[in-house]
Each structure stands twice: as C-alpha cells, then as structure tokens.
Length: 585
Image (cartoon, rainbow, N blue to C red; front, side, top):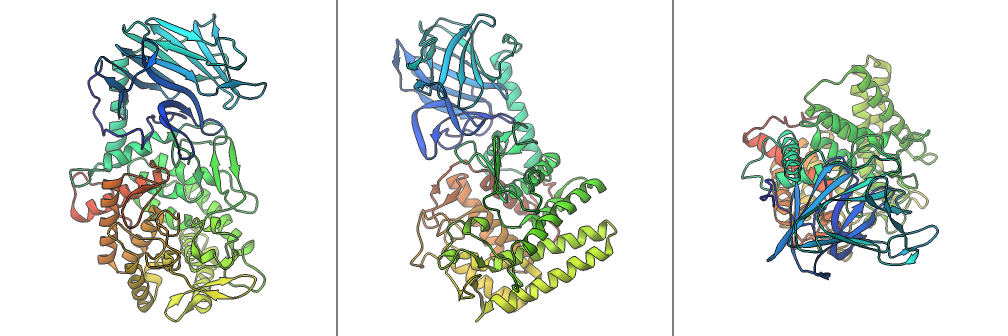
C-alpha cells in the first residue's frame, strides 16, 4: 500500500474527499445534515445524490475501519488489512485493497420505471454498470484484479445491487467511472501509486500558487486551499466555466454573492480561475440586469437575488490580479455591472423612493436577519452602501474606457445616493431600516445595521467612529456575532441571528481598514483566523463557543481565511508573500 501522501490530513466527516474538476466526492454526508455510517460515492451532477455505499468487509460481514484522508488519498484501515481510493481523473476513481474487502452497493434500494438504479454486466467492456435515473449517468465498475462477487444483476423492484471485491482477502483493484453511454472499455495507463503522486503534485502546485506566503503562523492555509481545490468542478450542464461550488456537501451551488469571495481569494495566484468565479453567475444575468439567486449543474434560480457587492469585489479582485486586464475584459465587466446596478435603481426603487429595497431577507444574503422581522420589503442601509461602492467602481471603469459622460453620471448618482442614505436612514447616531409599504422605521441589535462601514473613507469621521464602537460590542472571543449576544433574538445556531459568518467579517474588516479603524480591523482578522484554525471552514460558527455549524466544508469561509491570512502576511512581511494587499479605494 502507498505510504501516507503528503498534504493536510482531514476528516471526511467534515470535508469530502474529491479532486479539482470533479463532480464526484466520497463522503458520509448523503443529504442535508444527514450522515451515514459508511462512506458513499456522491455525485453533484443534477444535484446531490448518493450513488454507491462503500462498505469495508471481510468474510461477507461489515468491518469497523479507521478512515483517513489527504488531498490525494483516502484510506480505510484496520488491524488485518486496508483499502484506499484516489482520483485518477475528475470522473474516474481507482480503489484497491489487501486483507480488507469493499462492498460497493447501489445507494438507491429500489428500481421503478422512473427512479433508482439498474445493475447489469456489460460484455462489450467487461464492466459492471449501474444506470441512475436521478443523475442521468452510468457508474461503471471495472475489476482490474482480485476475486469478486456480485448481487442483484438485472433485478427489478427492491433488491440489493452490489459488487464486492477482495472476497478472499487477497489484493484487489477496481476503477469506478461516472460516464454516459458510449465510453470505450476502461484500460489502466498508470498505477495507483502514480495517481497518488500526480494528484499530490497538482494539489501542491495549487496551494503554492494561491498561498505562497503560508508558514507555521498560518496553520490552516493548506487545508483552506484543499477546500477550494476539491470543491472546483469542470464546466458541465448550466455551469459553463470551471467553478468553485460553495461545498461538495449539500450546499452544492454558487450563490450570487458567495462567488465574489472565492474570486478574490484566488485572484493573485490563479487569476483565470478567479475571473471565472466572478463571471459564472453573470453568465446567467437576465434581460432586466438581475443576477440569479443561485446556479448549479442543472438549475438556475431567479426567485431571489443577492446583495450588490460585485462592484466592490471586482475592484478589489482587479487590484490583486497579477496581470492587466484586456480592454475587452474591462468592457465586459463594465456592461455586466452596469446592468446589475440599473436593476437596483429601477426595478427595486418604489415610486418617489430615493433608496432601493430588498423584497425579502434572502435578497440581502442575511436570510432571517432581525431587520426583516417587522416587514419584508425594506430599505436597509447596507444595500445603498453597497450600491454607492458599485457606482464608484462604474465611474472608474467608465473613465478608463474613455466614457467621461457616463463616468460623471455614475459619480453624480453615487453622490446623490450617499446623501439620500443619510437623509433617510441615519437617526440618533445610528442607521435604521424603513418599511417600503408602511414608511415605518426601526432599528435592531443585528450586525446588518452596521454594514455601511463598508463605505470606509466615504463615511464622516463621527459616523465611522459610531459604527466602529457598535461593531466592537458584537465582537466575541471568536469574531463578529451577527446578532448581539445580549439581544432577545440571539440564537446560538440561528443562522443570521447570532452565528459568525465569513462574508460579514470580510466586508466589515475591509471597511474598517479603509475608514482608518485599523486596530479594530486587525483584531477582527486575528480572531477569525484563529477561529478557522480551531474549528475549520464551516458555513458559520457559534459566536460564543466557536463551534462550527451547518455545512462543514464551505468555500467562502476558506477563502475568507486565505484573504485575511494573505493580507496579514503582507503587513508583517510574511515568507513568500507576493499577494499585494488591495489598494485602498
């Protein structure tokens, strides 16, 4: 068997085993917050679907085995034998073992005319094949050597459909492929050990590119790089570019603000992949300029939108790219950001209302934030602040493209929106939320009220100071609680009503720094980096205990860690740093 492959060791209970470009993964997570006793081959083609249950066996009985993983290799181990898996390519996994067998069982227990899997032997290729209604794909198992047994071939209805390898305890090896119908017979061209070496080399090159500054002071950087690398899928279905999914657990989509954080984290070391992340959602922009709520393999949802942080993100991304964008690339970004901005200034402004509004908490990205409790259609200060930044970016881009009249229009619009924001929502030293239908105003103990700190140097000093003071009251040992811990609405696992999140952390840290509140920004950065180093890259975290919550392998959390760690390394002169901190706006 192969010696332990280098790279960060991780628990597959937390992070799926996968590889760059693949829609497949091996994980015990088989559905939303659902964990199996056995690992499963999962696919994210047409959605999240378990395909094969992978059970270590001996003499026909299940064996308890320890599971370990590195980026290149997953292993089941126990006293008398072991088995291991590695990705030969994005759609092909090689598995082998000795002293320990493996049963590969169809995860769907029943075949109907429209659901489940059909199991048969294909004499043309010498392989055993599962055809899946749920994924529309075939899963082909080719035994390369070793003794095996099958059950349930050509069965209809309810039946166990399985292939068991290593039934005699001797060495065995198989290949498992996700494919369509007409693929030629599988023929191995490399050994298992060569696959592990190649995969290790590919991952290391990726980590070296996006985190060259990593050292002993950034102990989670390599694992963060793996989370991004392993969650990247190749173009397929409705996803037209290499794309970093939010997770290869159940959050297997790209939401229309999550992608911005991944783009920024990749910009310095993987610029083309970063630009793909920025544009993948814009590829589905509708005729009215709105972005979809989310995109994945077989689904684009337009029922909600997400906040317009894209101008801020594009400016920051561009300032960290190692190359100059071509004029055509600038024009494309300008056109897309223009349409997105006009959507907010037209479709989302009521008659006579100077400020745009959200129609639901989901539009803001803060789905259940307390700002939306009294009413759902609301004017919030964060939305106008994001649009001011986006308008400023449009003005810069228009100037660069020689469109001085348009640049002046964007500047004047930003100035007017900035003024209207303060006239309409700033009261008694804090921002309020305003109901669109009722014109009622209210304030909350939620962090969303403080997001206008993103305006940075555009804020009057007294406002920046007031926001910073209130932000400090949200700062726990682990980071920024999205609802003040003393609020009656605070919930430890309340989604946006308490837990710490990566995007709010990045936006606030950046705004504070541009507002001159660097000491507080440094403190927030340090606490969030320490949190990830202790608790991994969960979707969000308990603000009081630091425990990871919900999906445990979330890419924007890994990206937030990489962004903050890279900037800290630059400020402190860290080893190998070549990722310039974004130039202040």
